[in-house]
Length: 449
Ligand code: GLU
Image (cartoon, protein in one colour):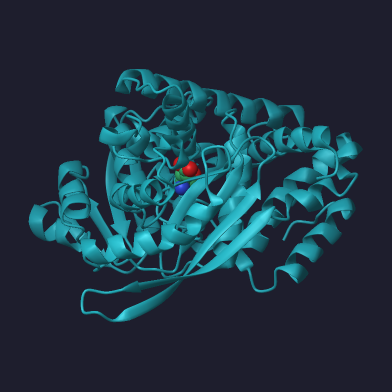
């Protein structure tokens, strides 16, 4: 592990001691602290008044019981979480994840990342994250509805358009947001549209929100490629995952002339040398809620499915990991570099392990960290909040144009910060420092809170 500035070492040690066993949270904090050495050297004021320690400590953590009844009448218990990480820049904002792997450490890492990501958007949103270890896979709509209602019964006490505004993440899409919004409305007797984002288009959702994370990552990578005179046109691209982020990454990359040759789910990956057939992926994943293994069977010629294995063994020039944290390891990074990778944009949150990131940077690969590259989703959530607050609804074109502009700004802000701090082209450093300084300046203005 790279050395930490001596002013920061004790902060990391305290975080690991006070949050024992929360490996992902430690990893996310460490990565930011590694970037902050240059900041405290240049502007020691940021190391004063335990400012960085305060930023590493969530403002509030809520853990609750979620009882629900399945279709056979059996009662189940899950655990619900909401970590309200930082409200210096606006109401807590960040998604809800429903996945069996969810625990407090995962939610804390996501909330921590979200705080800096949201700051990077330049919009007035703080950072938070929540979810449950509930697994919606293979559950009926009625079961998912009962779970969402039980989850919202407790969560509703902690939300509000000026307080905390959740959205989706892994396992939480339009269906779940619909059930949760309906229940919140009923519990509070208020049509408070701005309390959740990612809503359906018929009841206050924003156009382009569904597409925004994947589109945003593609815009970011296109601009990053341009710094070296490249574009997506004609490039071989691998996109891991096949959920919301992956699907709209594939769509945008294809519209920019890139050839996406592989995508995946937790069971394995599919390669289609002719280019992934997006309609088929959508039919399998969005309509039937099926498995990606069905792709090769339905498509036949030119495509094949590999169970388990690593999608990063597929040679490509651009990689866009869009599945989940730590899905791309040091071994995968070595393979990708050997196979001629030029650029990588993180569509998921923290999909590359620290040793993978180090390998990419040492090899001179253009590397876009998630908190910058995948900020388009939450940025468009903030645009949804704007539309709700003004009781307005924008066209797709208008919303996408705002998204594209925000992604250009994030790219350029990260690039110029990296340059200012003596590390041109280091988007990890640029993103961490830009996000940190925005949160830190607000907190300094507020005094010790
Ligand atoms: N879950 C998404 C993220 O990781 C979006 C959050 C939101 O829209 O609030 O950024």
